[in-house]
Length: 114
Length: 114
Image (tube, rainbow over all chains, first blue to last red; front, side, top):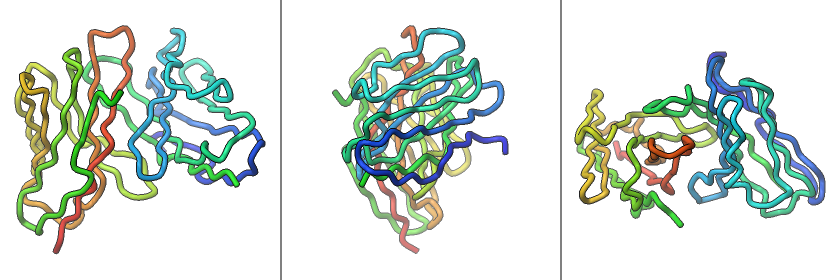
């Protein structure tokens, strides 16, 4: 499809395991963002990629979290040694990366840590 | 430090009436403001935006008002329809910053009663 695609849509894993979440942005979008939404909370910024610039990692909550992006395409968010507080919906968004351009979101990955 | 605030977690209105959702921000560097709508189990969908050079932007039943001196924006939906029932997030972006990070409020859950 033409929208932002995230996989898997749901992930259940045991505490201490590593997980990898994938985001396929809209083709041509140079900017890509990861957010986390815990139950009953707002969107929490995690990381932002813009073209070939160094990513803005200021929102990553701990060194267990990392993300990569290949050029201006797919991004993966990796959480190592998962904890129960990592349970949340992880949302990816992309945009043209220019001023006055909105983000477009995927439907998220619902992560549950047992 | 919540730079974008939505102080009303929920709002109920009768079908056909006006819905007014409010948002306050603290960062005077914000130049671009957006509203997103989110249904359960879906990602946020872009609804309407406004840049700081305007004080009003209208798109069909949706109008966004910006009061820069008060650091306040609002979304008006008129007439409200049951399908408008969703969580609404406001977001802001500082264009003059080196990055293009968006800052989100915590959301207002709107229920339109048939």
